[in-house]
Length: 195
View 1 (cartoon, rainbow, N blue to C red):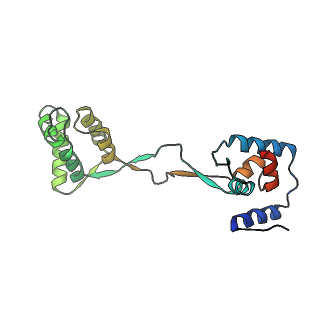
View 2: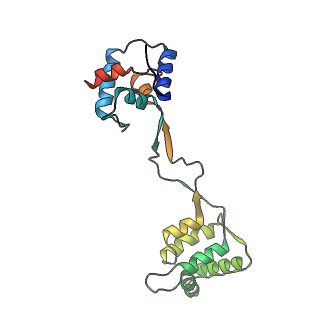
View 3: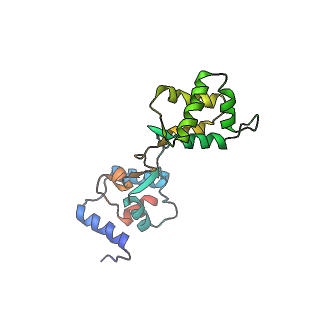
């Protein structure tokens, strides 16, 4: 007779009964021993009872996504937001705002002059700037090169978080990976592997 103390143990027993599994092979025993000794996915087997290890091995889990957060290019940005970011940016060398520096540099370059006039005019009219325009896409790197914007500010204005990015990734239970799909180790087999 088997006594079931909690729901997680019941799930393990039911799974084992459902699969009608046979005894562990020598290969499975070796794989289980290696899994418990090395804990390659940091499941936390150390100092756990055989029943707890069965639960850890049969539970699906998540890991942090090793890929960094992705970004996508915006189609447009509010001109007023661009102006506000420039107004709030303080130039490291001069202490001036990025907006004032942009105005001062606008007399030296047609590109900067166009940028200043476009941002100011569109901001006053509460319009958006089309970021698909090649002249506009070249603007932010130019402002970063001049120190008028930081890389982070340029990214904030021109990019947005990829909505399909997942911060965590679901992983199959370790029992399926180590012992085969649907195989649930018995606590006695865990105890033997730990001995």
